[in-house]
Length: 515
Image (cartoon, rainbow, N blue to C red):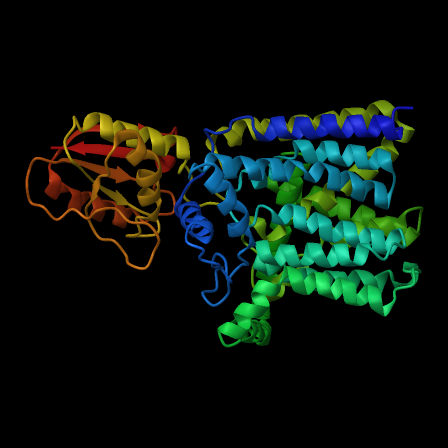
């Protein structure tokens, strides 16, 4: 039989290798490296080089809330192995995302059967959204796997009567908070799922099982607990304040729901089939309604379908805190959609084999069309506004600068994002340029203090220097700032040569040589 245990193992290995190939298609030319990545490179390596142990990680949108430091501990060690080269930690994240193939299979098998698990893992391997999360060189990227662990644990606990699913779910929950703080909401989803399926939980859960699960959870979020004590319960107080303001945000509930539905449509577009946004929304809603009707009519597997619907709609409570406009608001949810789609496709395949196979192929081709169109350019601008900040272009720009300097001391200035913070270029020149060319450039212009990374500041008024102006991709940067930057650069001489990298004017990296 095709779906025997031995064949499934071989199929999964083949699917995993395919997922790796899809994710590494345009690597390393499409590695995104902006301020966040440079900051993470500095902070993560300082843990091991300077024994600078971290209790808090990267900042969130709220200046009083921080993600966990686990991501820095993970990539810092890899940076050390790579001697500062961002390519290796970026590759590590690609591989990590591909491992999700196995977790998706286990989830599909736990909820339905191995056939559904295999189909779901195939859809995951070719998912455009998942390739973007694989390329997402930042702390939310590993949350794809941790949320899969969370839902796998819940499914084992609820549907397989295995108490060990409970600590697994708690582990996935704690790791998810480490990587992306707003995934704190998964605790509400766990409570809802256990409440809905309480009659199915027939395994005898003892106090020992509960204590083990709590111990696993506390250990996974221990950095938050220690830092909260150290900083005067800053995180707890901020969370309580946010909850108390729910009523203020609920006044725009209609607008928030509209954004939420748009995001649901995007889930369909980036995972199932790339069609017009309006049709994607209708298609996604139709899938959800179909599942709801399935549950109401109580056909076979109605509990499993209900579980998947809870998963797919799990980010709905976030509308109480405002409009969910960020792409990764639904991080981890697409796997639930893919398993749900695999379930429907498997049922269709049983009745109409050719139709089911054709639909699977169409889904794969649709995702590949998005992958080949977008992934050579790197991460989508819905995730990182400053499209075009690719490591390959930055290295080419640095090579151009040193080549055109003709051996003279170099002075550089850049229009940066965030403004006046040279962390990105400080890291690139120190890691890439200094070992290759034997000297660093001087930095001219304003520099904000308190950020990692530094370059020698140009203070000399001598003329025997070669000046270069770096204009970062302008998407997300006000044109007024660019105009002011170029006006200021006029003091270093007129432009005698200009080199650009990128195929779109707003995503181009530009270097001007001045005399």
